[in-house]
Image (cartoon, rainbow, N blue to C red; front, side):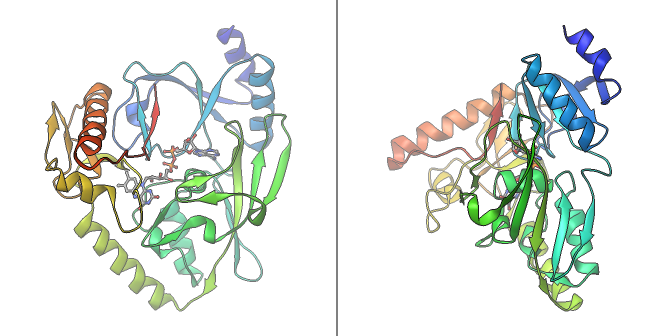
Amino acid sequence: MLREIKKYTERLGWWQAAAVMRDFTTIKIGGRVKLFFPRGLEELTKTISLFNKEGLKYRILGNGSNLLVSDRGIKDIIIKLKGADFEYIRKEKNNLVAVGSGLSLQKLLRFCQEESLGGLEFLVGVPATLGGAIKNNAGALGKEIMDFVTSLTVLKKSGKLVKLESKHVRYSYRYLQLKKSDIIVGAVLRLRKTRRKYIRKRLDFNRAYRRRTQEIRFASAGCVFANPSLSLPAGLLIEAAGLKGFRKNKAAVSCRHANFIVNLGGASFKDVFYLIKYIEKNIRDTFGITLKREIEIWS
Ligand SMILES: Cc1cc2nc3c(=O)[nH]c(=O)nc-3n(C[C@H](O)[C@H](O)[C@H](O)COP(=O)(O)OP(=O)(O)OC[C@H]3O[C@@H](n4cnc5c(N)ncnc54)[C@H](O)[C@@H]3O)c2cc1C
């Protein structure tokens, strides 16, 4: 069946042969997958209709910066949004910016700086695509991306493109209410006219703060657990439990930021998963608190 689909979909996009998720995740872990790159929006729509018609399961990959994927890979087809239809960026009237969901946040920040549009500097150093950042309502320093999104364009399972005003979409800390099958293809963000030198200052300050406080020397998937509350960061609990530096083979709880699990080189899915379970049990036993995972596990 898949061979026929592959043949048919060749005009809609291209398959990356022998793709392994460790090449597409920031923690550098994950096995073989069927990876598909649609050529454009029209091709994506046709692809989705075809996959749904054939009952084929698929997932959307952003920059893989919040994922832990099994070393055995996963059966679902992985769709990656790249190219002009998904990585566009356009300045519009009234400080609005229209952005494709495949664009990296760092490219978006560079564009904003050049156009003297401020507001998103808190996202400096977040290695995400716009689509992944919106899906997770990424945030830092008390701000979150959905505060700036005015509308989203979503491709529904039916093949219909729908524009959703953000005021009609529910979101909260690291959460956006969308159906699992919904694909964000683009968004419009409202920014503030800001002098370029102030944007640069804030970017430099936030970048330096991140370098001081977060783990950037080793591969990771960012924070593993959501903070139980604003005043109670998960990292502080893990540090208080004495788990900084705790290791399982080549995976370790970061010594710099206890809410990061790092790949010291050659860590496996099992190593990281062991640490996640170990931390969860330890925090439950020590403080009576059940940690909620922020990292997403694909297995
Ligand atoms: C060093 C480091 C620092 C980090 N710092 C922060 C931080 O400060 N704040 C923060 O919030 N996060 C942070 N993260 C975590 C991560 O960057 C965010 O969770 C980010 O939102 C994930 O985006 P992504 O593009 O990598 O998505 P992925 O990890 O590829 O995917 C995440 C989820 O989004 C879905 N998705 C992706 N694209 C789309 C789309 N177009 N339509 C629908 N669904 C989609 C995927 O299917 C998946 O469910 C950090 C990670 C690292 C490695």
